Length: 85
Image (cartoon, rainbow, N blue to C red; front, top):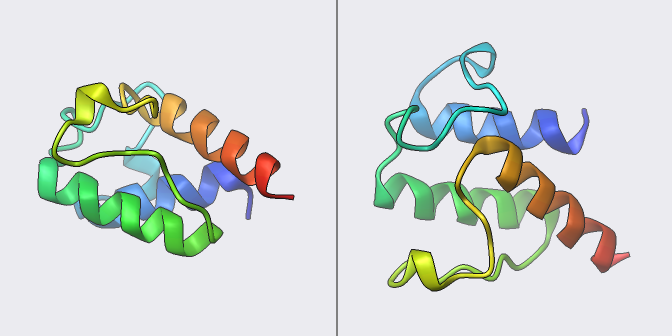
């Protein structure tokens, strides 16, 4: 399973959707993911990939991590995974 597929599966699980309902263009708002769901998604992604995402739930807009769309989240995760190696 690719990083993209794994991230989409985690986001879909948090949104209680099928992975096929989650597209790269989707925003978390489109998927019905609220701030708690976002934090749970971040924790699940960190655990899945053994990484630390530079995201402050108290100030999401002040974060260097782009959560504007599923594609942006995937790109950020891919970068963090590549830096970990």
